[in-house]
Length: 491
Image (tube, rainbow, N blue to C red; front, side, top):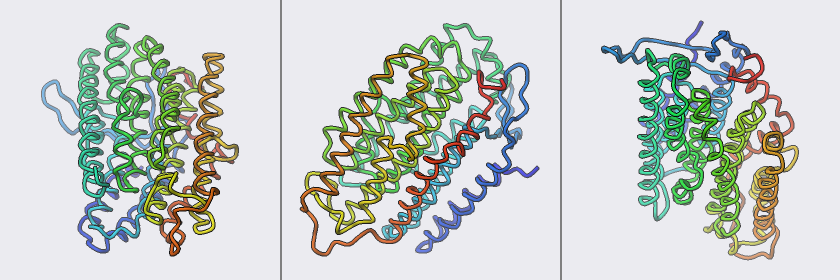
């Protein structure tokens, strides 16, 4: 069997190096690499067998696994171990889609294009590595590798306060990463696992006392929660989004936030079930606060990009709530919602970037009636806004409906909190559209034109997927539910 995952990693690595060295042709190398990456991900999806071999000990099985000895010194055994299941495949698909969309959208980038496109590909390479890594050290190395290109994307191509935002992003996430690493290593040592391989750690973690599992789970949760982010670890996100270039914002919201959710599911919820159950009340509390706080702060925003950033915090609160429910329906909803948010937030950040490019501002109060002068851009803004507030037939609706149904099954009338907040979410998006798209015409220069073809193409791809997966969510659901997770059908 072909080592598909290693081939994909090699493709991204060679494409990234080639992009850095390509000079003015970097965008073409990046586009070619992204197209090949998307095709390889499609091959991975096509070859996914659905139900991998599953042992009676409930150790998860993975598809397309590769394991090679890497470091073996005394007690330390580190392998190059990679593999995929339905959950990781969904995030890999999201990575490939957003890489293509970001490269196309950024086609007009003229400020050191080789560095810009190279860093975009390097970010996606790190994210792909996180989603396929099945070794503790390999997972951590890819996790940390993502921080470096994003730091430079924000710090060099960002806005006026880019250095402050980049440094704040790096400090917050790096400190959380250190805590996460300590938690992972403590998990390995205290459990007595014979190696750093996920299956070995998973099997050995059952030997841990519940109180030890609880402390380890809280350490891992802190590391992953900062990357989510959830309240009170969210303050780095709006600054990073506002100052980042548009492509950086797309990858930051679409991919980097998903690393936190994926890591929480894969390395904490699955591995430490007793610690997870002990921490459930805390997770529910943080989730509800995050849902409410993100939505309330969104109401106060006048900068379109900052509004989208705070709405992302609100959506990540719903994801955490779905994960905390500890049900197959809740986990399905969490993965669906993260995929949907990746597509929709990417579209909205692209749209806010285009508004700034065309009108020189993102201030909602300064703009009005832009639809006649930019009908394509207005259509993209409307599609993203309606998807984000959960309109039926668009991608967020099946995800949010599943999350609310799982919450009703698990918590009863507590579901009213996210449902009421959903009305608030609809309110600030409708206010934004009424004011900016259909209000009194103002702040529109006479020589303004609609978005250039490459920005329209990047956003158009995401709009098409928003409709496709909104109408046919089964394309995603059938892959996710075949993941061999503890407590799911077939386990």
